[in-house]
Structure formats: structure tokens, C-alpha cells
Image 1 (cartoon, rainbow, N blue to C red):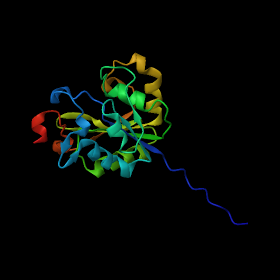
Image 2 (tube, rainbow, N blue to C red):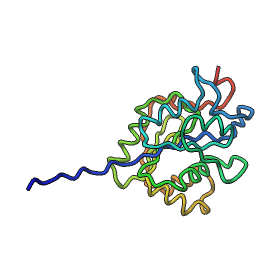
Image 3 (cartoon, one colour):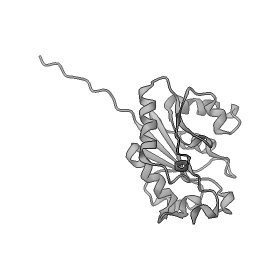
Image 4 (tube, helix red, strand yellow):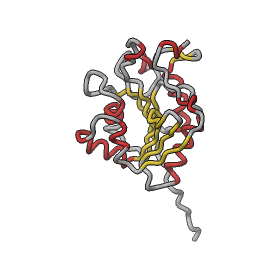
Length: 196
């Protein structure tokens, strides 16, 4: 009798597009819909996430009808007043159960596909890791990171004990940091001059 081989289950990766910030340094409005290099920032973000992810959730708080046109589920912050990215990640992942979560802020359009695929590879190769992110000469770059299911479960369980910062969450995780020598890839678009 022929023996059938069992194929290993492929990890499910959920992309989290962080598009719900207050854009206070831009004078308000929806940064995700501001145009850069000929298209809205959200399209840069989704274009990077789509090839890497089995599903994408958009964290957004404004212009929801327009954001909905991109065809992905939207989760808004439960707490009013733009509480920050940690709350956005907590709320966006509340009802999900993926193996990996690839998290990307909408204001980093210079990133390249290999920045995302390298994070996925690093997390997949080391089962004990819970988070992987980059460091440049400007410091840690948590606007792009990948985390495990266990990292998200910890966030859901301990959100009330954290101080609301990504740093406080990452401090609880087994983390790998990858050095990126070119800090320009991680440039954040925060000021009107950045869009010129």
C-alpha cells in the first residue's frame, strides 16, 4: 500500500495596515489618503502587504467609505481620540487567529518587498521568536514588524498592564532585530515638506 505523505501546514499571515493615526504633524486629516509618488499612501502600504499576506486588516478611523473601497476589512479604534498604534494593533487583531501578523504603518512608502519577506523568513526559521523588526542608525523601526500568534495573545491578555507604547509590548517578547544600513528606506512621512 502506497504511503501518502503529509504536507506541513503553511503558516497563515495576516497583514495589519495601520492607517488610523491623527496625522497631527500634518495638520490633521487622513494621512493614508494623501498622495505620494502618484498614489495614496494606503496603496503603497497595501501593495507591500498583499504579496506577503493571506489576509489584510486595515486599522482606520476616518473616511471609512473610501477606505472600504480597497476591499479589506476595517477595524476602528474602540477608544476615541487616536490612542496610538498599540491600541490599533490590539483592536485589529481581537477576533483573528493567524500564525503571523505583518504590521506596517501607512507612512513608510520607501520600503522594499524584501524588507517584508525577510521578516517573514526570520520568524519562520526560529520557532521561539515572537517578534522581528529592523534597526537603522535612527533606532528601532517598529512601523514595520512581524509578530507571532503568541505575541498577539499576550497583547490581548495584558493590554491593561502595558503603558500604551509599542516599546512596552516588545519588551515582553522574544525579539530579533535586523540591522538595515540604509535608514532612508524607513523614512516616515510626517510633515507637509515630506510630500513635495
